[in-house]
Length: 321
Image (cartoon, rainbow, N blue to C red):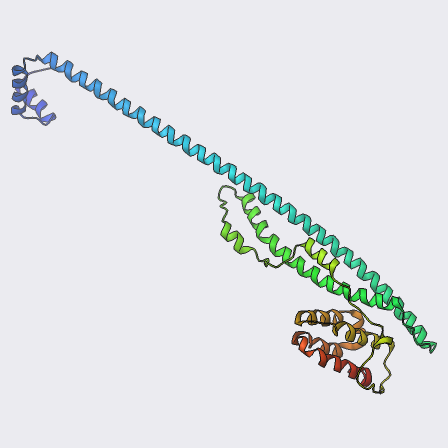
């Protein structure tokens, strides 16, 4: 390196030093009895030590990051296992509900077949009664008549409860299906919110399961239907001014006996609606008569006596047409 004055000034400017700084360094080396070569070796040793310290710090940082990564990986595996268990539980619950739904549909088909069989038997009974009327032979009370009418009435109640239970079951299946669909379609973004899931369940606390509903239907006492020949009243019997057919009288007597046993508003409404929903009631009483009877369903059991009075009046004056 050239030691000319110009080169020395350029060197000092390059390292942002002055001549005084250079004099201070030279004086320090002289006082400490340190040669320039020894100073250079010390500087290089210091640089090597500094580099080693930097490498050690980097290694410690890497070790710490590895530990944090292992903790995160363990936590992730634990959450993944919990999520897989939740998925299995949801799938099992969905399968159980689908099995119950299949049983409910099978029960509905069974009710439909029983209903059709009862209709055929009732139609056969009506044909026999019409033949007896044509021969001027009044039909004799028969236990078979009461059993058929009783079966139709009981079936109507069972069918209404079945449809209500089916609707509640569909409301229960809906939220579970939505959760499972979201989980299958996009598992990475899926987050299970228990409070939101529970709030979506619209099934009431007092809702019976399909199994409990079937047991309730089996334990319910059959509606007691009295024969029209055994009906007694405490009021004087008026002479009928209109000749009613045996079918009309049979439906009216069914109303009197079946609705007359209602104990509360709900029971009264169910009994009125059950008889009104029968095809035979519409066929023999007509739309106007059924509309008047059906209007009593929502008025409660307090209107039972008024309904009975109206039906007795129809037996004398005829059904409005």
